[in-house]
Length: 173
Image 1 (spheres, rainbow, N blue to C red):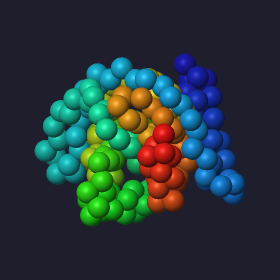
Image 2 (cartoon, helix red, strand yellow; image 1 turned 135 degrees about the vertical axis):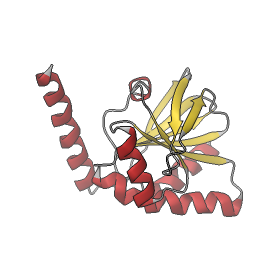
Image 3 (spheres, one colour; image 1 turned 180 degrees about the vertical axis):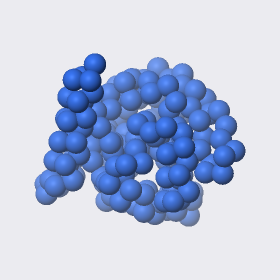
Image 4 (cartoon, one colour; image 1 turned 90 degrees about the vertical axis):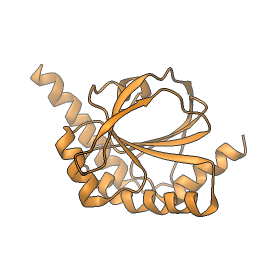
């Protein structure tokens, strides 16, 4: 069992290192995978008032960002996601951003929320099942979902440019 964890984290670290050092232009990976959603997650408020959040339907456009508190690129991308959330609010775009912590315990995820102040919906996957269904291989990964179908995903640190590119690709479909 330890060997399995070692192999998993080895490839996770290699993948994160590779993605953060890649110079090529950002590439959205087409997926077109329908997801059958029924997840009981925890909404993190950072104040200990966490509540159950049922994720069962992703109507409209939803950008889901998978993260972990110890992930350097996850920390770096918070400002980019916050700026994009501000744009969504300002322009009244029909888009939601959801951040889902998948590798920490609840206390670490709450501390991250307090320290970095993501201004979008922040959830915790206590059962650690959602990354399996989405096919997440590491963090950060960002998925562009429309009406319960993953249209694109991006592996690595997300930027406003990539978020805009994903939004435009969906609008042009």
